[in-house]
Image (cartoon, rainbow, N blue to C red; front, side, top):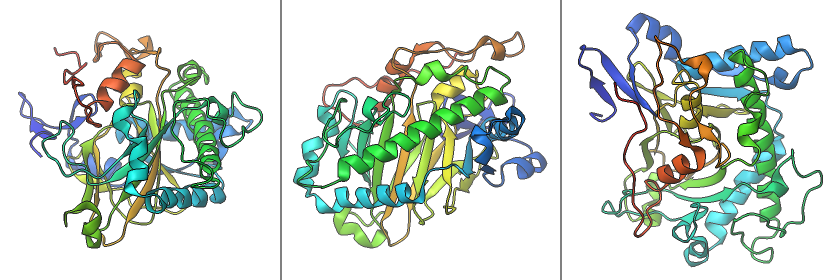
Amino acid sequence: MADIIRRNAQGHTEVRTGLGWRKVLSPSRAEATTAHLPVIDITDITHADQTRRRTVAKAICHAASNVGFFYVQGHGVPDEAVTSIFAESKRFFHDLTLDEKMEYDTERHAHYYGYYPINLDEGIPAGAKLNEGINYGYEACCDPDVASEPMPANSNNGDNWWPSEERLPGYERQVKGYMTHMLRLSRSLLRMFALGLYLDEHAFDHLATKPYSILKMAHYPGKGQGQLSGTDAPSTIRPHTDYELLTILLQDDIPSLEVLSNTGHWIQAAPIPGTFVVNIGDSLSMLTNGLFVSTMHRVINVSDRARYSVPFFLGANQDAELKALDKFVSTENPVKFQPIMSGEYIRRSLQAVYSKPDVEIIKDTIEVRG
């Protein structure tokens, strides 16, 4: 924990966030604000009455500023889409052999799309990885703001590698359908962030017209399934932050996700049926000059059952500049982060997660040091 919690030169305890350090709240205030992750009903997110939308937006922005994590309910994503993406995830991980999955190895992809296996090697730059996953990037044919009609299952106009229709019938169509729901919901949330910050409601729209996004399906073997990973250790993801604008996480019924609050304690983000967990990424924190918090989180599956989760990471367009907006910069609150292009920031961040031969890992922070 020494690299996550520290005491600063003034004697204050601080916790690490995605882009620097944040002072721990006093016990009385902390208990009131961060003992639990808030659950926000976003049914009115597209209501014709802006007053109704702004009420939702304020609740979202309060959570984004204080915790960086929150649940959303009333999101409009059909139950059938949730059931389907879990089913397709299990088909990919269990119906394909390891050799078949390795045909989509992320090491061979410029943007780290594709499959990564369980890896126990602590010597690789990214360290041991006790889960497996498959990543799919943005495709215009899935974009509800671009494509008016769904494309045939095998008309891939992106850089993704899909199992053949013969091998996994219907898989590509179902996964792309879920991606469409995530693009629609994530853009609606961007508008809520703008509205809650008293910006024009569409102030962030231009950032994600062709987003550097990833839809991931992840599998965490249970403790009783050590034969899958070669170890009896619980499957995990070490503490980290997300690099994009925001993340929409679908998790199954196994409690495994934990969030590091600004109390300096881990909060369990227990699954709540019918909800998604939303969290702020580094990119949105940069744009708000740290007002929105990109929060450390981790996964530890100590159950004896396999856990499945499906996070969707909405990144800004690769050519978008991540720079603090003037509204959030003042003499009292100077610029905290150096400007950087979205594509460069996400690529160099992913390099530290997905080990690739002969690829330099950049560890320099973009935090402005006073």
